[in-house]
Length: 362
Image (tube, rainbow, N blue to C red):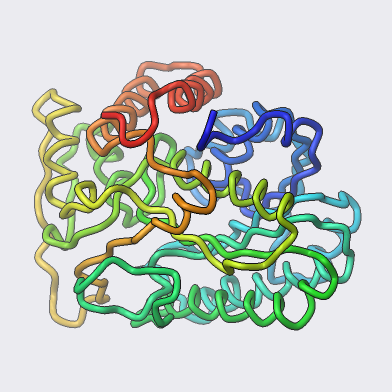
């Protein structure tokens, strides 16, 4: 079906995923396994407890390698040992507020970790598609004047955003200087705010809310008026898979980047998402707003993405609107609390997403 990953392409394909122990990486690794790919993961141990990687038993059916992308020798050894045909680079320090507390670690992981991955791929060779996952926050802020497009200036007010912009520049330089001549297609992927079951990271809206609801507490949210392009984690992951198929078949380098974001109507304020999740959770769920103190870490007030290029090039488009996304997310955490088989639950949501009507099904 148009806009869906091709199982024939992925069957027995050798795929390396860095950051496979993280929220997005675990979902992607499980999906690749369902598609029949041979997956190798390279990452640090899971950063939270609980975590989706462990709960869904992702390690049971892939080549699980613990390592730090800041260690070039270890990363190159993993690439050389596995000989991937496709590489997805998701390993990152992925939290804006954490980047203020640990800016050096953020730049080292997000910039030099990306450089190390690119260096390992080019030195080992044989990779038919390399996909570098960055962020919608890699753009120079425009105050919400318009949705960001791939050709807009890169930038970053905070260390996280700036590190992702730097990773974009590093990837572009490697592509032009080395990868194109070697016949190794490369692209960067920029996704909006992803939500879904299995996220327990600190200072992420849905994770904070669900952690509070599960504990019977009243969670605290910040920046209630901040607008973000919310989408289920499966939406951009489908785009990543489609982008890899496209690079492999086209064997060319343009465009360098793709945005993956929801329809404009699903870019809504933080408070709107929190209110909907309270209604879905029921049981008297509520939240309170944290007053931002002077000097607190700053975050962009408005982020919107224009994904027209991914729609045109890849046939990608969102399949779940925000209401469905939030319902599926609340369902996942509710089932988790009830003791469900998390691997089966997560695989079931992947299958449900793939079987739903496209072009913005509610």
